[in-house]
Image (cartoon, rainbow, N blue to C red; front, side, top):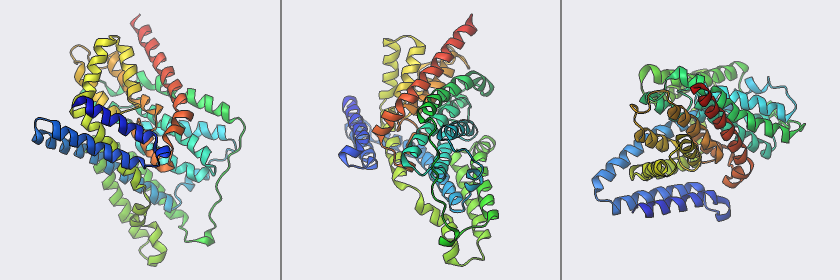
Length: 428
């Protein structure tokens, strides 16, 4: 059974990667793969009731991520409808693409450490649509944003779900992970930025044409600033909400979405229905990319099947027996996270190694946080940030692998080598 499940996943992954040559939407491939994996597991498994229970657990965790994604995307659409991003775009005066690339990369890096890599990617990729007219330029920027968001999320306990898992599990402490991984994570971004800015040279920024106010209904400056501040405030406060209430992040984003909805209805209550329709959350919900949301559901459920059948944990144990060296094993785990979701990989790693043998803030836990957090940038489907960018800009899997994957790999090894060298020097 395990061999058949592995084969189904490999074929599903190949269909997603070859979306354009096959002319089959990746969402269809992901859903079909998830359905086949769980159906095979149920039919060939020994306990159907246990499989149903595991599917329910997987659906719960998947739904939390999907609700968060939908909430964040809707908030971004509301801010966009009110021209809220003009607050930022109006202050960006650079005329060189390379300079803009550095600004966007560093903003994404630090924003991701405060929010999370998924929300940061949604916000920044949406912002690029307001700044760049050429699609090829937007795709390159989206790739750098994915790298920056994943790198920024790796060095704080709230920036990435894997570091949060390790933090809650007691494998790392907040201040130590920030101190130890800041420079490796920054190198993970700086190396791709340096290469990309060199390739861009002195190319100018080609901004899209601004809409003429007379061409449609516009919002006031007060409404733009208000919705921008509310939208960004809700996204920033989600980690605070989680810390205070101990409720999952999706509850915070839905709570904030309800508040923004209320404020939006109040500030537009005196307008005619046809004038205020484009500003409502109902209209924003129609503009979010449901295809990417469905793809996200399929890929998460497919990976969950591998997790429950212990294929991933078996892979980790095989690596332990075959390779032996912890640093090499963890780097391989990071590379594998470019193919499959890093959450079950980290979960399997947490189960493999005992806290008594490897106490909190040991080399292995910090290095897992770095590698699993940043390795997903190598392929577009290797992280939640990449999947979000893929949906927002319709990025082709093979285009990303050719144009961005090598840059992400350079940054990945640069940060890893620095951390290993730093750890060995500390032992001396």
